[in-house]
Image (tube, rainbow, N blue to C red; front, side, top):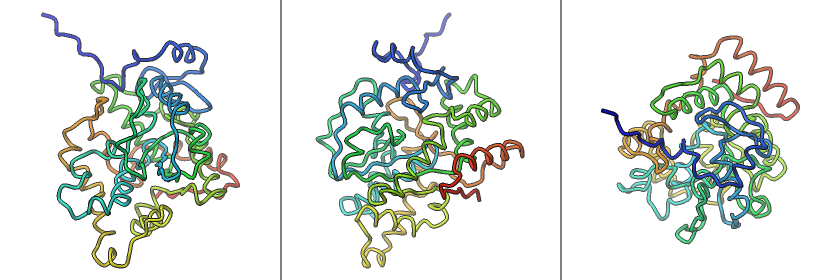
Length: 332
């Protein structure tokens, strides 16, 4: 007896590519994929064929509003956590953080703050924004230069989050291997580390992505807020208030007295979110298990995997790339 073939999850499928996109791919540099077979270099960054199609559609169609808030991250830098913080913060009047049926307790943060190129514009979709309340909360991994022009030219607020490259790499390596079908044919850490150091990672080169948004935050601090995962973890209250100030939705004295700040941090904590039913047993519509977005959330997990040589190599590259920028990472 033969067992019936089951089709791969949506995030691994590439049969929905347009002929135009297939033609484009044939002209682009390609390298071994982190999750699928290959990733391609488009407009200076690397990503999968399906997401390139989503990026192009988003660039052509998305019309930003001045009230929009867009969370931008390097992949595996705390995106899920910051999405939850952002949603709770901005919607705290509509959804009290003390209510038992708060949306974050029953829905994954990626549903509440959807990705532009991953979710809204992927696979030829035409999103309907009529149900989105203002301010619209959206997310992207796209480098600054490849954002839709309407985002760059509007008063849209960009909240950028990055993480030190060692933990970013380890988290990305685990995440991509977990998403490879049935966890078979996993990529070795040595092979993927070499690719990462060459700049070949999802939405990489990592350093270009970070540096471009860092420069934008320095040149236009009212538009781009630059956050570091390590600083967020170490000074959660201070950084949450900083985020609220940037978005012009500061906490009142009464809210602070009532414990609203503490309650947001508690509800959005890794421990709370990772143990919710929705995040342990459910999947996104594209097939990724919600639990794959919650691994450890720790600073310094790289120490369990890196050799001295790996650490030194990544240090050299980072120092060279960031030389003169004033940008430095915390590792512990």
